[in-house]
Length: 465
Image (cartoon, rainbow, N blue to C red; front, side, top):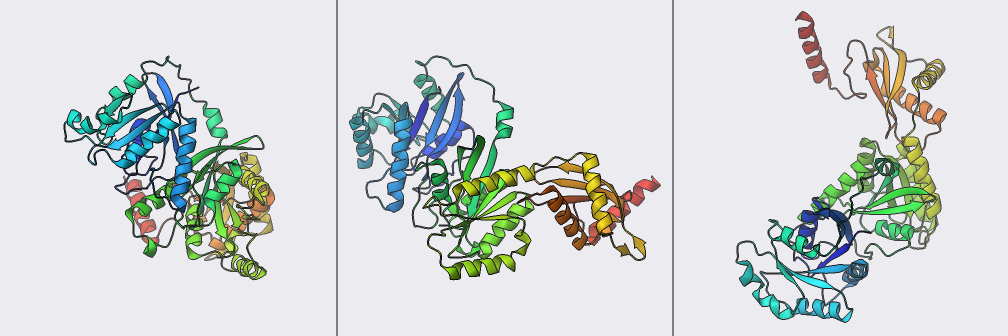
């Protein structure tokens, strides 16, 4: 069992900066902005052949609103889980009454802690730490988390009394078996509430205030003997409403989460309906080739009129999502969660389908027999054979003559034919079109006419050579 260390302190004292330095990552958002971190975030570190678990937490404050009460509960969970606590203070601010309050809280709960005086960059370490000796902490370490100054000696001293632990190699098969689920949507759609309901724990801060979540948080989760990693993301608003730089970084993390996920759950507020921003997120997920499940949330509060408006939108404007499963849920009341996870499992299974070349060619032959490709300028487009080129999403490489002139309508026909025959749900399908004249072509309609002419000139040049 690895030791567990929790980072606590006032807002903006450098906890997330230290977390990123020790985990050698950029998982935690960092900015000169108090209260940026709200949920607790876990990371695995290794120093001197001694692995340990690090927990980043939100800032502790005296006067607490709805969000800060949730942040405090997350910090309490982290303290209870930790073997010992690093209490960070700011050398530039000096000793603050809030620092005393945190120390008194730790002593009342008999929590083992050390004092870490951060932001000593540019000043003498002994002078910067002078005021903090009066706290009477068992140990005091002056550091500069942004520069890495003093951190290695602190970790070495903290772990000097612990036995060496053999570092087991990571099980790649176990990692591959884990399905990553990114939960996306507009602010206040219920994403964090859904994760708390699935893991049956108040793991994430939730409130009625839009934009409560700022970081992307990854949480291991098991359902019906399937291993998942749930990725909570910040709600994405219209660009015109995004004014804070912090929110822009949150959006970047949301887009990264979509890119790294196997399946995307798009949370839609039934009462608000599907907005343009939901459409943008869905288009990004489809462009990345991600399997999608629509979670229609807050059904316990929706009226029949809300359902009619939503169904009208899905049948008209969002008809392209006809193959995506739409699950009605209430994250707050824990309604429909099993059905939602079964839909996620089905979508991931569809996205990872693996066909042999003979099976793919049989499907193509059936599709061509049922609907022959059209003619272009009197010449029939011929699709000769295909093979699968990848999964997540299922990708098929089509070979034939004049494939670059294949209409979009026929490509959609092939997608629907393959999807129906293979009984795929929730996942897009891609076709790469290849011809003897253009063997390096990418997916359908990726080249503009100008790019096509340039490529033809290059091929002609190489033929002359």
